[in-house]
Image (cartoon, helix red, strand yellow):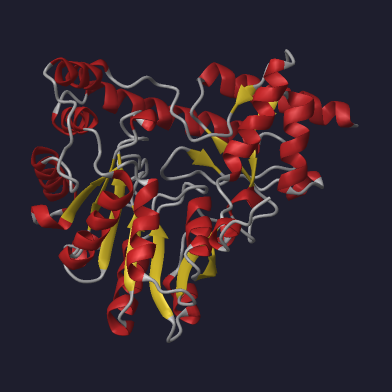
Length: 391
């Protein structure tokens, strides 16, 4: 076998898809599994979005597009940003991407040299760690503590900054915890970035999915309008139930967005125009289905968390955003890994261990509430029965 590059051996991928492979194998064997492992909305993409795409296909919108993104979509993103964050970025600050995941790689590759450091929340989205490792940078893990409701604290971040720190990643609402950071902590982290000449990548993929009035959504982009230190990562997958469309948008300083656009152009050429036209409809079109989905998620999270807290040995704080609960299962005498395996084998409920998201979450599991209320109640009951039969 001929050798691969050193970088190829640094690719870890996403552990949730490895679990999905195992689950699908069990299903092929005839076992019925309740799915709570993937952050995959169970809703279909709203019809008005699909119709916009279909109409564009019939109108021959099937050719190359500007590698930065359709002007009309970038304009829609700019106006939506004004409405949600209080500033309107310039068109040349916006890059349309093939999914939001790609923004993590583009930003790291264009900002961070091998050996330089990136402060990243732990537990955090696995792509952060995989992309950092692949690019030869160093992940410096900032712990998300249960006693802080898993919110990233500026005081923890400050202790980790060195002369080699080039980027800080924040994610609010958070995957996997559902935590929403306070305005105070985000502002202080931003100030640390300005003081130390550090960029901040703000992963806001769940920004439309916040549920608590206690923590109003706040973005560091509100402080510098993405002109100097802040890069916003956003996309259409979660809030609009468009996971398979692979459509994202980055907002950042023009000189960085220019280079990220060239990297996209080199690797992907462009995002298909008919997908972008669907994105325009998602932002500007009828929001009835989008609002209904959010209301349903709100109901589900309460039922799921109440159900988890009714199980002896499990405790779970109420997530304030995203589509995940992050219960502590140490009271069962199991690690998150052990409980995930137990849940799948004996209850037929697929979840993910906290260890899939970093080194500071062995006592936790992630459970997605992207399943029906009926199935959430059934999953809780099946877990209770399995634990009771364990003796």
